[in-house]
Image (tube, rainbow, N blue to C red):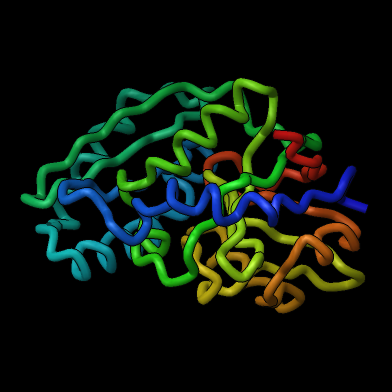
Length: 240
């Protein structure tokens, strides 16, 4: 089983849901984000998918976006890279079309099992900003920093219906028999580029509403992120 101990936290729902109000009452200024992996083998991993998502969000939020200019900046940036090194590249797109690119070296994408837990805060399946990758993610950032300090790989969220949605920095997949399942976007989550890629390429991956019961009964649980890769995790109870 991919779960170590069950976790409910349902009794804390009313007490904690107010902290998630940023999801439905966003701050007025924000930027669009894309975070990419670069390696000599793949170049900018899933670049086409990253740029597609950035374009979709820029159209939705009416951000100026010049893809030709961005591609030129990325071509210049990769000239600085060492072919033997993996890099994490963070892209910020501002409303006026300005672009910020930063990068850092990665020691490698490790695929060994990790620990994750469930946040006591609920999100809303109707929240607009959960469907776009932006800097408007205060709750996710705060919870991620808190649990990383405690040694967790990621922290998972549930919506107002107690449906599993996603990790702070990952999409979630479970393996059950011959099939893999991941929550549908209607639950309130980001359509991660690796998530979308896997759904398009693997016929044995399906969308399905997941609850803690499904996680408890799963053969395996994976967290997926285009920079970190595919990582098997064990879910442990949130004892807060």
